[in-house]
Length: 92
View 1 (cartoon, rainbow, N blue to C red):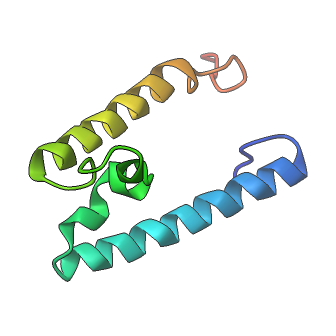
View 2: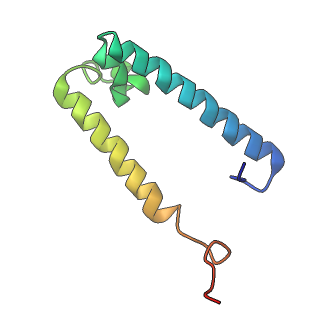
């Protein structure tokens, strides 16, 4: 499997967090299939609805939460996932 970090311990921690995050989302997806769509609200997943009541329910907040997630994804993709010189292969 490809390295995420060069430090072995940090790499193991990152992959552990990724693994448990994937399992967590699979459990939430199974809850959503059974009819609890609020389980997939990103604000509810992050427990932000305990700070701002009502943020984890409703269709508008559901769509807004995933717009925030997609915005964060694109920000990370554009800023942190830039190709480095070692990832770019020069033409032969």
